[in-house]
Length: 171
View (spheres, rainbow, N blue to C red):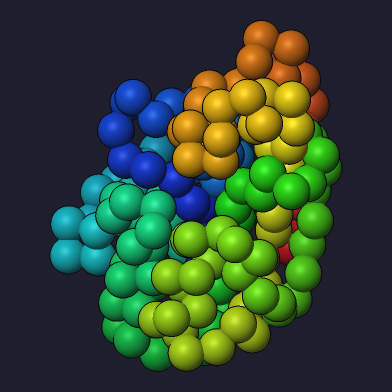
């Protein structure tokens, strides 16, 4: 079994924020494939299953996603390498997609939580660029990751989300 996890914060107030790019990517994929999210309170996730792949959106807050991953990992007896974590990255240009088999958290608190709970950084991750240096410098990092995409960025989201969905399909 494989797990593909999109990172984000639960709650409608976080829809279309940069930190919820992982949720947005999986929502787009689910819509394309005709899947509906179900809730599992025990594991604190929204999920759907496609064959032997479990897609999840943790319902903890972003900085605590490792809790859900650890519960799922223990239940299914998975290795960290069985997870693909999809997260935002403000150090990448908006729309850039970067896949790595392993690596540091690079300042991403969701990846820090995952590394802490897995006890390793040896798991795949797909980083989704949200970079907008002008806006980030004006409002600071915390407000930036919780900010909504600009109108211009939202106009580019359909193509970016399609590219992400294509990657997931091949993965």
